[in-house]
Amino acid sequence: MKRFILQTLLIGSLVLTMNSCSSDGSELNTVDTKAMVDAQYTYSDLELETMDLINEYRVSVGLNALEKINYISCKSEVHDNYMILNNVVNHDDFEARAEDIVTNLGAKRVGENIAYNYRTPAEALKAWLASPGHKKNIEGDFTHFGLAIRENATTGKKYYTNIFAKI
Image (cartoon, rainbow, N blue to C red; front, side, top):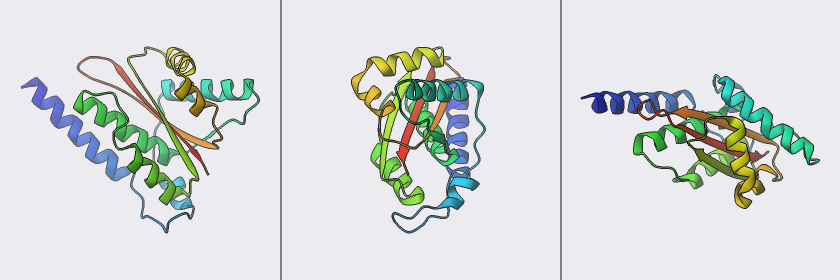
């Protein structure tokens, strides 16, 4: 019974998240500034700390700091909720997320990092930097990013999805 209630709540929040993060759409390869401005996202302290750590690292190696975009964080949140609901850690449907960001925000390039079960943002960043593929995204030729961290209510484990874009 408890599992049914949890699944129902997760599905409900996923549906609400998808609706609150949707945009009116735009023509391919044009920047939809309405989507960038209108997307609502409330950042947790952990999310802001993670974004700050990523930017501090980028600046320390001579790269530009990334600007956050709520729309991208909404897409990250949807993926975290998907992973929690399905008890998986993966990049399923990354192509669809990337294409959505290209279409609605005019991105020229999109990358994604995920992490699972790190207690702190510093631990997640350390793991990403130890992985060549994740480090490549963090050091990539990107201008913007979004990030969401969600906790599985049953296990207490955190899911991180960080999406990068060059706009």
